[in-house]
Image 1 (cartoon, rainbow, N blue to C red):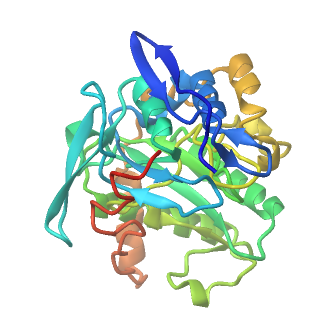
Image 2: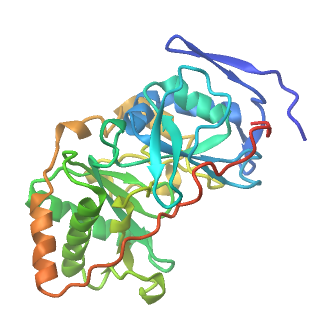
Length: 336
């Protein structure tokens, strides 16, 4: 049923964002509305802006709430104010370009929520060097029979290896069943080399925890109880939910930065739209210092060369999960 509530105007940092249908329910389980989402993102504003800063960003939109279809949208939705910034990307498979959202201020985030965005999925490169990632992403992806206790144990192994390398990792919940660890890297290599380095790291973690970790390429060949260290998240046009992004799950979980000493106690089910604002107010942005710790990936590329000399197979480049035509999305006439 259409919403009858009048539009609300939100002022943020000198911008005014008009929120239509503010009482439209996006999360039926809890009754969370579009305006609730806007207020959530306002409450973690510095964190979400830092996570998205100048990165091409895919939008996961739910025009009818979680009960309706989910739209993976690369192109900026129609009707954006002139102050919403974009970055143009080329998609070789289609030989087409798309202007994706490129956040430089909180108002752009709130406008995207007005356009029915729930999740923000940025690239691991920035618009000044879109083909050279500056973020190495370690994705701890549990199989269907892998429990969270195993995810935690493997995260400690990841921390151990990073420490030995002299790399500073910044963990966060995925907002679902896994964990992510981000490492800032200088934008000096292409996606293929960063993925190759990520694979070498994943293999080292697998060597240290062989009964718990897999790097097996094909899903069908993996032990369903194993944890996959997903190096493919460093491939071009692969994105994962940003720090502080809400996830499209019934309980409105948030992909939430953690301290390493919280890993054994933090439960992703407790980190939601309802609880993260107070946590953010108390702790601030735990990823705020990420840029201060760049790690050159040369040691990982040396590991990759060693593994290849020893006969390790080189998996093929994956097709991007998001590799739909870049203008895929709902029609411009659909009400947000």
